[in-house]
Image 1 (tube, rainbow, N blue to C red):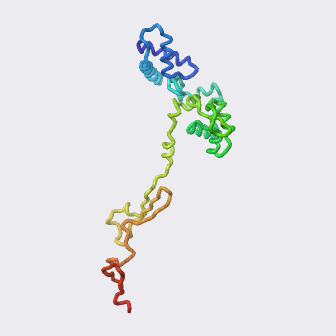
Image 2 (cartoon, helix red, strand yellow):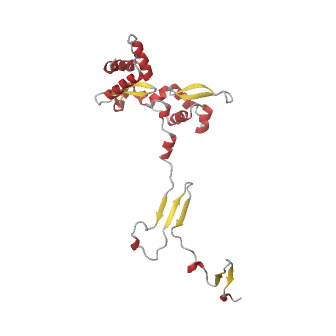
Image 3 (cartoon, one colour):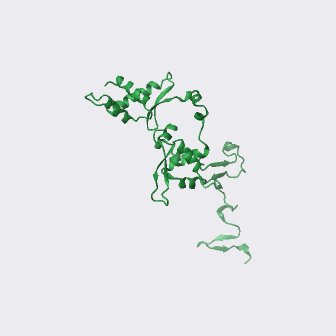
Length: 259
């Protein structure tokens, strides 16, 4: 079957399905529908047709698009028409999750499979209400029990509706935690105090001291030191008056010590 003839059948399947269809499911359905064909369609042929469909509905002419979300392909209205569609369902459509529910959902998404006790140990507060709301919205599911823990508590995981709700295909599409933390993590900073960098070297007075640098360590400790540190000893050679170094490194009394 040519790709041009295959595309309308795939569009019809995606449009009529009450759940997202994966590429493999579409391939099997098409082959069952055209069982009389000598050569079965391959997954690559279906994927090529899907690429054409995505490109077709990506045009500004259409208010909807075909997108892989929630574990499969489906027709989705483009975000520019969100407010218009919201009028069909009123406040229920626009209602968002509370911050407590979002916090609980984030913990489940990144730590799944996880028990209620483990969720509460991370949050530090009871999560009964948030978990119940997430179950009602079908964003999480009970996937079983932890047989190794006392009482065999229930285990919670995200659902396919969760992926569909956030427009991702698998849980692996979630942002990596290290990527999130890297945006807010403080790096060690070098701070130059003084005017040494702002003024040309010839404009500095001869009596100015060495450049002082402040360094913030990774632990947040402020460290100060001076470049080209000068010795506290004002006398050249590093010797003080009245003291002379002996060849063996011991100090000897000078003639002016009165001994």
